[in-house]
Length: 165
Image 1 (cartoon, rainbow, N blue to C red):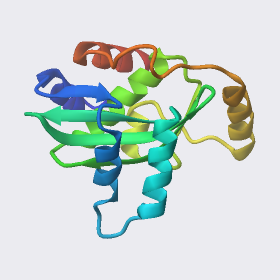
Image 2 (tube, rainbow, N blue to C red):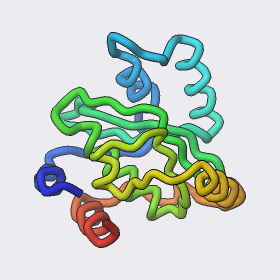
Image 3 (tube, one colour):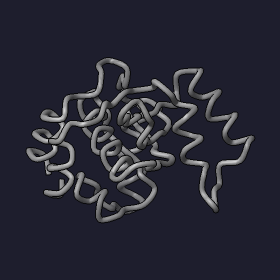
């Protein structure tokens, strides 16, 4: 985790929740000039959420949604779909908490679709197609429970990400 993100998380002037406002996170992700999230896709993700398959991490500052990330959980695999920021570092904080939360709830694979320097700082690695298929097969056969605990504290997120980076 970058030093600046650690400092930002250490400030602890926000609140992080799980599935508190899934709909608002997807809406935030869709509110861009160019987006792949149309009304049909939005409705389908909402149905997945109501079925207990799609989940979101929300970052709140002063009772306003500052950022978030959402995705789909299958077995012990989590497929990150999109994230957004409405305030500085909102999506970065959400992603750091999500990585920590997935590790702590038994997930074996976090598919981010692509690798960025920020994702690498949180432990992402690019792997070959064959390695991905093997990890995917194992993760889909595994069991993880994203709802088994609440997101960790700021100190927990910093400490665990520092120890595993």
